Image (cartoon, rainbow, N blue to C red; front, side, top):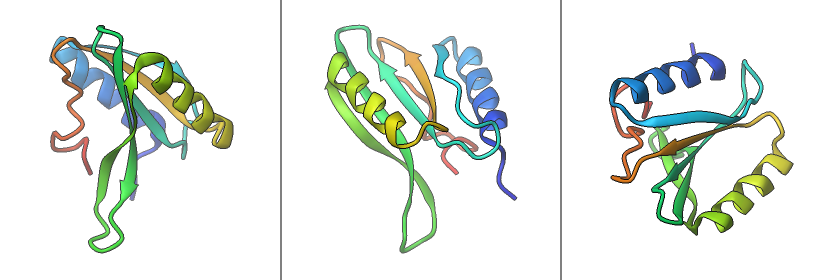
Length: 109
């Protein structure tokens, strides 16, 4: 059984808070089944947006880069993605060290 999007987002935000990493919800998607997009803002004009994807060979869920580069370009990519999927969540993580914790157990699955 999969977790709801809202439950995963709250757990992710709590994990970030415990690591003293600032994050907030930019766009509130569908509580049950909305996709989650994560924007990592390194506070130097650069950003990376991640989206969850499936490895068709293994069936594993992984995080892949949706867009990276200038923050304005990444924001534009997220806006385009939300125009296709208005139920998607957007979480913005702000960390100069580039930490997002998406590779940690429980967040990567």
